[in-house]
Length: 399
Image (cartoon, rainbow, N blue to C red):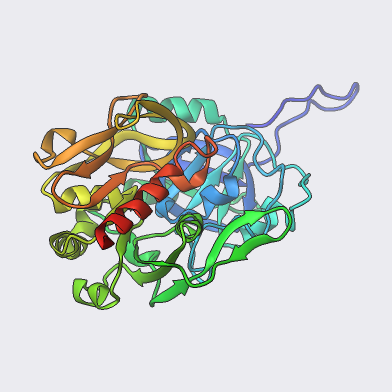
């Protein structure tokens, strides 16, 4: 969809430019626009994100693997991109995001931190985008019908085999039952020493932390690791399929269960036995997002697919342990079914949008988790107490 202009007097009537990108939904709906970023086509599940800022962080968040992100905020790309705001831990790998849908064309970047425009950045990362889409109508469709599968395609010449694209979109498997973690986890173990950022010196380096944390990478975000480092934690990141024996051989004071994409029940087939062993050893454990869901699965609860998911940086969550309401950042298409939580799990957080579960703590083990992203700072610091809570839990366990 493009802005209509009045024809020049005496000239032929103005016509819209030929579409150079399409978003073809599984039900056959075809949305036209102008292509940005990489050329080609990519399949994915279409979600919408209500954040006003942070598009670079969103497009590099491994939790979005397998998804095409529709931005409801119209001004995307106006601050460009930079080298610091990438969230993917493994810079050599893709975050797994399949595409981006924008309402307005990308403008030139206007920010002192910008090193590259969004269009060039998308191209460099192999990400396909489409601009000029009625994102309000697409968001309403998702709210009414749920998150559809789709194919996003970009061809500068505007030559598309629409029938083939419709068939490709209809053939995309549902997200339920799909384990996407192997595509985003780290390939090998490594140590992390980068802490918080300041105007004066950028990201500072941490010395030897007094708390030893093993972070299981199901699709980690870099700022989570920085927040752990801020709590004086020496962090060792391990791949998602690391055994409990290996984790315990690293002598952790605490184990962190990271965020990540896909169906938690599918990832849980190999992750849950490891988490159960960690819990049996009574090692302090903290989970975020997918880590929250996996912890819940490990204690016998179940998860369920959401209608439209939670994606944005303006989600209110109530913490029952403090009585306070936090403004949080969320990105998840599955949720823990509170009705299946066992007696040793206390619900600590709840979404004030739809009442869904957003956090638990165990009464017989030093473990807790939240569904949202406390490191994303939408509040901006409403939820950072959770990292201190984890540090205090480790200190108490050490005596």
